[in-house]
Image 1 (cartoon, one colour):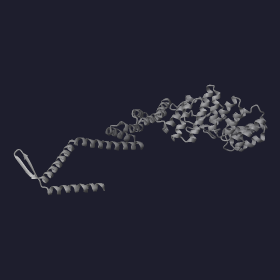
Image 2 (spheres, helix red, strand yellow):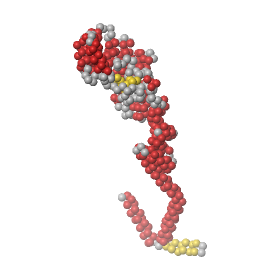
Image 3 (cartoon, rainbow, N blue to C red):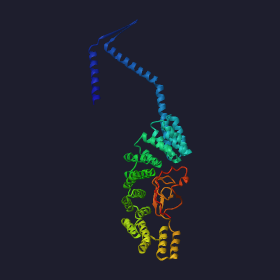
Image 4 (cartoon, rainbow, N blue to C red):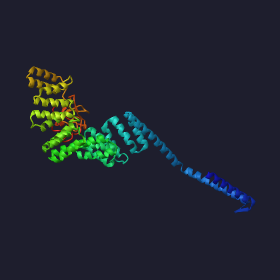
Length: 462
């Protein structure tokens, strides 16, 4: 609207000026050597305006012709970059589809067209991984470190590559650098925790948990579990160097964070018993038993009451399992104590409740012991032992990642290095049995096991 008004005002001014000149037809004389021009003032003004317009047009034409090569070069560069971006996009699509040969060809084309290594390094790394294996991508990830825009991405690739090849020290160094570069990056925090934990640096690992939760990389409940395991690791490390008070403090913290964590309760109970705090040890065992019944807890609890006669130990075991009486481990624990106390009816009642067709071998061994101690019946006991030979394997710590079986719980599986992967399996397969000294048999690409994390209470597995 304003432009329209201004245009109308301009036309009005021109019209008024033209009318004013028409009413005053003066004379303009132009004398040039040998020439004389006589004209009116209005014609002179129009001629001057036409001359200025022509001069402006010629000037613009001259500038356009002068800038022609630059415009042509810019258009050529724009078309080159357009084709480069198309090649880059197609290459990333090919890499995502697993077509390494096409991805590599398009990566080379994109690099030639764009002449910007920052844009093509990722595609070159991915195509190298697909075509020539993981190691071939390392130089490209290294090259990314030279550019601030791609440094974090390069570090992520190097961390993954180092972990895959089993170079834990290199992976930890790259993860620490990524954390310093971008402290709130979820993947860097998660990788740093895993690598610090694998190196036995439990305090450093624990320090990554709070930032990881804030960054959204770890769920609060998962972080709580990891913190409990980190405190358990710190407790074991402190015990190893003789700082039993510090070890007890960390074990208490681990147990408070994860009351169902059997290794924490066992370690807490053992440390408390060593410092002559049997009530604290008993409370830890009872708290965990209500959530996760386990033979190691029974063994520790029976050690707490070893000075009592068998009848009193039976009463105490029955009190221990009162929060979870129908559990298989509860019945086995009571049956063992009852056999020692010669309470045959109690032992038989609990064993018969679990001695079904899918029972573990240890149940049948207990039935054999019961027959021998109660009746002195060797043939009946042998029948139970024969059934034990055909029974399901005893429960054991089994890795959910590689199915390896360990004699003792560890934070990292000695077979595959997976963190917090051991679970008490009631029918554990036994393709591979690992002890805490099985480091020599580990695969070359497995990260080293965490130091000092095996619970020292012997397993009751047969």
